[in-house]
Image (cartoon, rainbow, N blue to C red; front, side, top):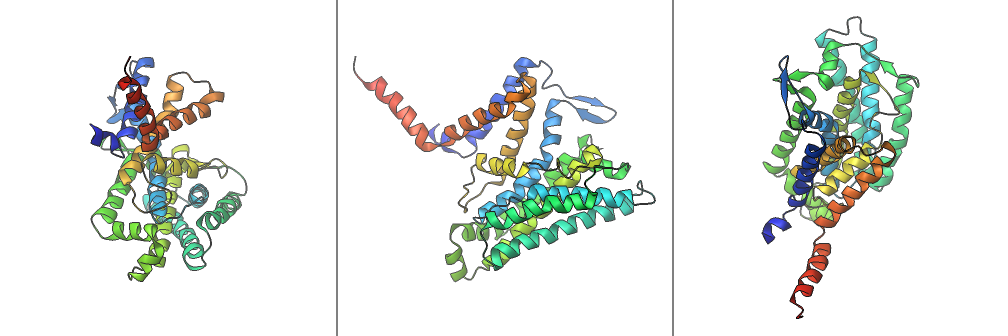
Length: 338
């Protein structure tokens, strides 16, 4: 039992189970999943669908944090990706043609890769602190997105593009399948190859990794490119779901939620060892928190406070020092003779 309690995923799973159970109290049909027109519907399906963008951003953030870095620009990259895609689709003569839409999607992701290279260049080559380097794009990226949209909300009507964020395949949301594929790809690259060990080496000790012959600069640049690519896909999902590009709302504060998801999953901000499963679980917990707040009737003005309280409880439960002090005092009281 003690070994189970010490597992990094135990407490996040426990909190997720409690959140889901609390929804059942206030909504009898919370766990009900129905099949309609070949599509699965239900609260659990909504959690999977709505958590997809955050899962993607959290994956990229996990890789960046594993190297001891941070990326504050992912929200702005999301906005840029969606803005460019909607602008180009709006200029298509036939926005319902699959080929041109796929080309637009590819161009949007390619632009995001350029921004990832920019972040990696600032951090790995110029030696700028990651929080400052990515803060530059965090601020400027919103301006770039607003320039693309001319400060307006761009509405698009394209059936193929709509599929990315609101479509279904094999009865499941396409956005969830995209996120699942990204998770599988990340796990394969980091756990089935030496990449995961190299990332942990760079994050644990950059100097020692360079002395060992590891090309730390290339790895650092690569993780920022990955983070930007995943953020770009998340931006496409977001804009596709609402069929518009809103440069102010797209990806707003998602970088903070992504960092929180990574931390909840047991990855230390200091770099080194990381957990892909933990980050995915953290993203699902945050999304479930949002849905739970609505389900239990938490007032809108106190929703953020409700989320903060739950996060604090989870962080304290994950702290071995806190558990030792609390349970140590409890055990001491029980052993004191009457």
